[in-house]
Image (cartoon, rainbow, N blue to C red; front, side, top):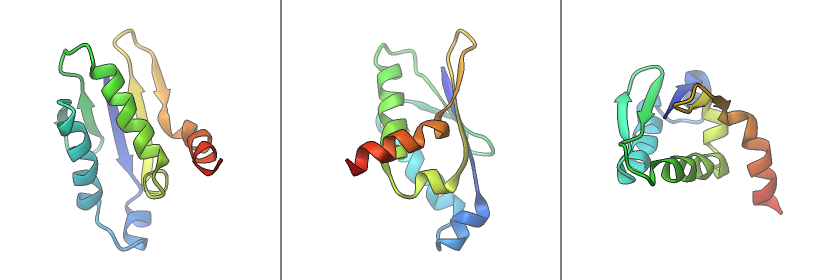
Length: 103
């Protein structure tokens, strides 16, 4: 399983941040849970490490990112891929998470 990110560089710069700072913030969350960064270029890619908790850890990070004010603005895409070929547009779920946060 893996997740890929691309970023809206103009949006990031408009808010006074750098793409590198955004990537480093995301990287810290995945590395802290033992998930591997296999590409820090575009797309930035993280994969599982073969541990049974990788699925839940990856989704916990993704949901936490969706709950932030900055991630849905700064990400151009965020796609999760399962080993069976299933893929999901994670950003398409942002509105649900944001709505829950406000309730």
